[in-house]
Image (tube, rainbow, N blue to C red; front, side, top):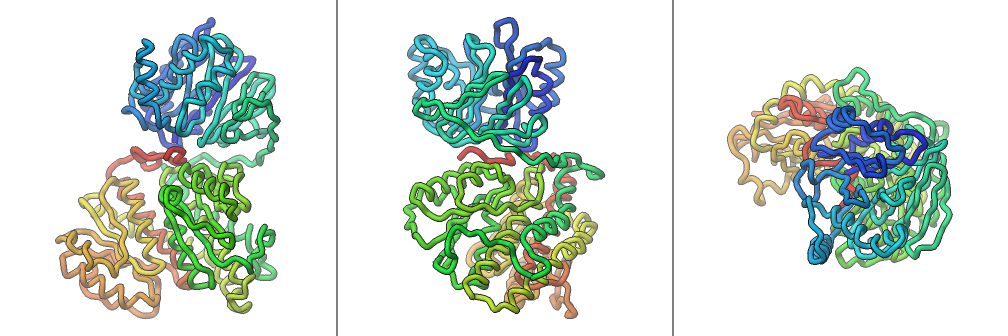
Length: 606
């Protein structure tokens, strides 16, 4: 969600800024822009639409600046257009901004009374004008500090100042920002992926930090204005694969990467010789823990929902789940013998990070499950478990969802073993079955052709429902979410047993309904619930697992069977056909599958 890049160099920076912005496209955005110094003036170019469009505009201009900033914007304040695109510049400064300034309306009124005029509808332009005002009587660093003191909300900022043409100012509160180090040039970025193409040496700003970046130096200051040192981290030199290969979209590529991504994650956590799980360095005595709270947003929240069932089945722990944006505002009863688990693909999800900060403030035990080990959530947690699935580019999560569930499952198995909640032979049997999961996923991907054939009914429908019980209920939620994200049709994920308590009123003749009914303890009950919707004219897509027993149900429209495995591992397999369904339904409509409208990969605003 929005992306920042800044470069201070000894040579022209425009091409590198454009190249880095392209690496930030996966985050989701609707406009792009760039600003550089040229002949002591700020030269600004921006447009609605993709970075490719910006690149064409820039190619027709002569931008030779050696210091510059770039941005891809995901609209919050103001519609997506050229005027609202970043950077926002005055005659003295140019600013790009990730986040939201919550008191921008109040600040705007104050500045308008002083005679300032605003061009855009954005909250960001308030920062530009306020900084311009503070520069009248203050040097740059002090002016920046005075400006930040007035801002309520979240921000990551990159700032150019005409009076200091050799530097970039960076500042962070709530939104991630990093500094990269190169030879005769240094970098500022909201995303380590974008910086990684230029350097593997990186430092992260903490909340309240300000940095002053020149081509040959980087200075850091804390929220009190005191100069501080920052640890320089070395990122892995392994290149993340951004190439689509033989696939036309990243989503399809990432769906078919899941057997390998799951296998890689299992190899990281499972001792194959001893059938044990390699999680030994807990910072707490697990036997003294009595409860767990799982916190996430969107797809990550659905992974938490599945994990709640595993915790209830495999341990004696009390367990609760929370949507991060709700958790931070309610009256929480914090408990010392509780582990608070935060799940996020990017590790930068604003609401999840804010919930983590609340737990840290109350000195709680925190554990994060993330895909980016350099992320804010990872760096601020007591304990981190990476999902090891590699870069996920498509906005709609697929392999990261399976990775989140997998890490939560091995964590829960390990905790169960350490607490003596599970017998050793059962523990080892579950691990042996887990090692067969990648092949089961690979076999389940063979449902692709069937899901492609079925998908047109869902893409043409005005709405659909996804129903399941037990482990299948959160998978139904995830399946509905994927269809909403990609196909822009209404889809509802619901517990199958709750249909008769209201949602059954929505069922009408021809409406496609997905029934997820593996051969588990809920199977017979789910079949009964299915008949309720069939009786109202629904077209039922029935998804179960392979068995010797025939699915004994009349009037089912289509049947899909995934591979056989334990009830606990079926969520991994049941997810696959739903991913394929959403993919092909969106493809039928000709939509941009990797970048669905209004959505962003890394949600860094509340």
